[in-house]
Length: 83
Image (cartoon, rainbow, N blue to C red; front, side, top):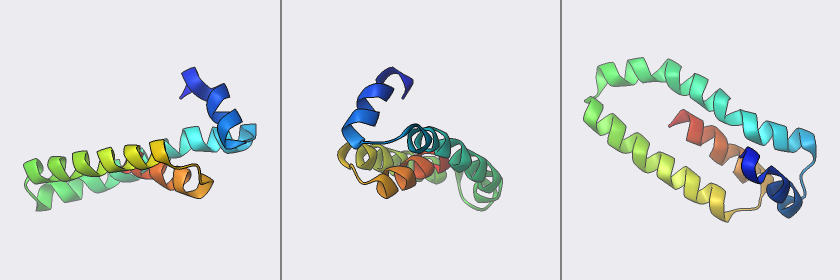
């Protein structure tokens, strides 16, 4: 996101704190996803877990691209990190 940060901030009318949280919430998702991954991969075939995560990641990125609602943007970034 750093390459287009100014444009995103202007289009969405975000202050620096909101934009910073938007950029960092993906790492919270990654932390949670890493903790859940071991249990999920032990209980389900890895092929199906990866397919599910790939499809969900794609969906969250599409949602992030087409919305301008801040709460949806935060949820989308967090779920991107999770998947």
